[in-house]
Length: 390
Ligand SMILES: [Ca+2]
Ligand SMILES: [Ca+2]
Ligand SMILES: [Ca+2]
Image 1 (cartoon, rainbow, N blue to C red):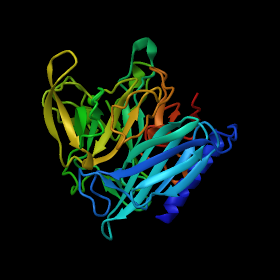
Image 2 (cartoon, helix red, strand yellow):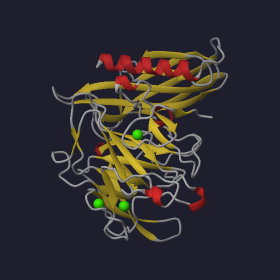
Image 3 (cartoon, rainbow, N blue to C red):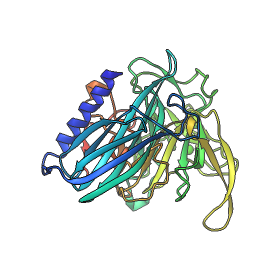
């Protein structure tokens, strides 16, 4: 694991030097950051689910985005990490540690955030970590914005899932992909589940099923509809997709020979369609979920899907700018993919993969940092030509 940590750190350094070569050097300042690192997942040794536990002894680092500066420390006995003598500017903060449950199971606890330091004074913040299983599946690409403005065509949306492991096979049996609730929820950081407008499930038995493998290094494409959309618009040929979303309650295509990821919502009739500007997609194990009624902004009673945080494998929120209010808890994704992505631009968002030979892609659970904007979309493979962030 030390090797992996080292590799990721080197990647960070590489990105920093690659993207930010013209940043001004800023000498020590009068500002400070004081972070409390907290686990509510019950994974940190001695903690219980739902009860905040301060994480002592974990590594915490910061990186300025407005100038050249990085620093690292270790949280003290109270789970507090202090960074003194900081110049004014914007900072990304990261923490990550590995918890060994038994010989075969390791969990990664990682957290991140973005903070602004003014000239003087201490910026205090609490970083809530998110649990992921070492080397587990990732949402690698989301194509959502559409590519044909003249026809308002966006039915060629897809989600790409990737197995970043070099030796472990994972299984999609019973896994769920969601369209997150596109609403602002003041309680978002305090509830133990994510809320979805609708959800689609792979066949098979969650957690224990072994029918639908995804092999080390393999990409799997789940298309809204697995057809050649280029016959109707300036759109993608997704006839080679591995899976397609299917809602048996709606007038949805069911392409023969392409297996379905099927809607589980009791009364939604829509196919898997996600917002063209700002939304989130979450992948869960599918072992637990529920339905609850709510009143929507128009005053109507509707049903949404709730999925416990402990079942989340990966989640990605996207938006055109980082100033948006989060719709997905920072414990799953602390940032936003897709900065600068506009409707019908044909651009896609994908995890950065700085060196394809390393066969790694970034996962800090902060999509602002982890994702690139790319053109064209790359269903079934990885990007090599990202679009620069403006
Ligand atoms: Ca469909
Ligand atoms: Ca089908
Ligand atoms: Ca791809």
